[in-house]
Length: 118
Ligand SMILES: [Zn+2]
Ligand SMILES: [Zn+2]
Figure: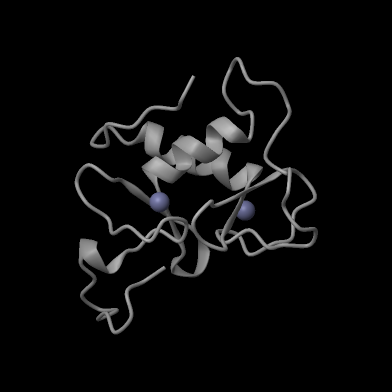
């Protein structure tokens, strides 16, 4: 999400706040922006990616446990039927597709020292 009262025409790193943990974007905390200015940071993405079973050794389990039905993913704002990850600290959800996509974005960026968890 964007920091309240930020200047949309002159956005700074600290104007980007992770929807899932509330941290701001810093050099060692990369951020991926989804639709509508919603963001997920690299730390949350690592947890989500692992818990959604997207790692190479993970099965196709986890993720959807304990998540109420019909919740929207904060990044794509869609209700997804596939497994969805819920933040432990906020009411925010990340679907499997967005976790995959965001991980791809971070992984590709050479300036960001983030790699997919294995
Ligand atoms: Zn975060
Ligand atoms: Zn999504």
